[in-house]
Length: 257
Image (cartoon, rainbow, N blue to C red; front, top):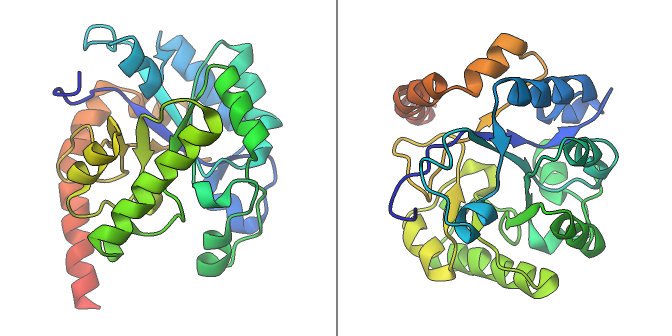
């Protein structure tokens, strides 16, 4: 499996809440929208999996044909209020990405950079609870920094230290890494392999590999048709064409300004 690119839809979520603070709206979907997503997954005959399950059960392409991965970035503690109980109720799994320096802390990066409201993040007890529930806890870096803006040594230290912290606290292997902000550093594959990860998750990427896996967000404005499209193989093919153009346009615009 490690030599073959994973070809499984990966959903990226952050907050699940009704009437969120205005600063969180872009990164939040309502309870109703979350339930609609889970309903679409079930109605399409898809089953949730995790990177842990893929590695430990040695799942192959055939095994993954009807699988989908749900991922949550940043580990807001409020996920235990609604989202996690709903997943458990349906026998579903998800992957939760924790920036380890902020365990039992708050989203300081969002507060400093975007003026967002303070959000309580999960503590060690809650992370252990996820593992006990059969969920996967992955790394979202140590400090939640843009790894493409720092030196190799700083990026690698952030990547490897977060893995060490999680494995020590949870007494469990850490298989996957979600790049903070979706920012992929140079030599990312070398760094992740050296640190012992099996998968790396981005958002947009020109060339996809197991260390730059594409993810898609579910937005509050997505209706059932949009959600079903995003869960489809057709959408994955569309992304392979769209992402390189999107990134090129962004690069040109950044140079222009």
